[in-house]
Image 1 (spheres, rainbow, N blue to C red):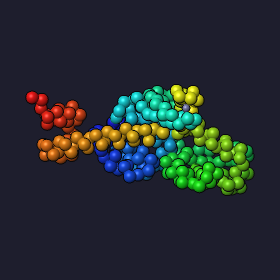
Image 2 (image 1 turned 180 degrees about the vertical axis):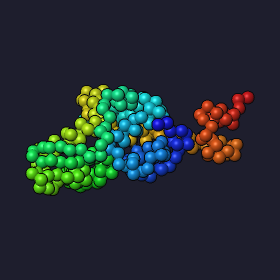
Image 3 (image 1 turned 135 degrees about the horizontal axis):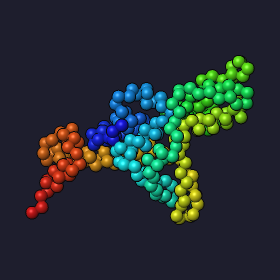
Image 4 (image 1 turned 90 degrees about the vertical axis):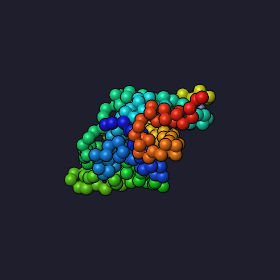
Length: 247
Ligand SMILES: [Zn+2]
């Protein structure tokens, strides 16, 4: 995988600007991996998608990710830094098989790992119980007890818990916990890393700076957006400086 170029940054921003967080993550990967069909990207488990986003961040901006969150107790802003390479090195890569099996509470379950579309569907559920029920309907491919089919709403609680644990084991990058200590109130908050939205914030801010440069250079020199973005940061910067030569 190559990092996003200046043109790729602007292209991804244009694709994802008016979209949901899910579409934005997919826009970044679509631009970075044009050889992959969109169904292939949406079919990835959440952890597999996030592993690609972590790698793309490393290739585009380097391993250091600067972000912030709000303290769960006092809402103070908590700035933090992460090393995306370290996260990738710490966790097992997601299981690649599309179907997995589990036996719990006497029920044999065939299931797949949740992907982007599943989380988007769950996010629009009215409450957490409805969300869990929907996730089970989407991700359980078959469930049987003594060869008789079991509907997902009939699964024993113990089986649902075992399934949720197994999904987390198979896709460890889907939920990366972060424990942040608040300097203002001293409380520790547990968050989950949302690499897609942090990465998007960086891309959006750089895209806007690049387009501002394009507008200045296009007006002054008559170059196209494509020409300005293709020339690279050092040359672009130099041409910008030459617009206002020091006397
Ligand atoms: Zn606090």
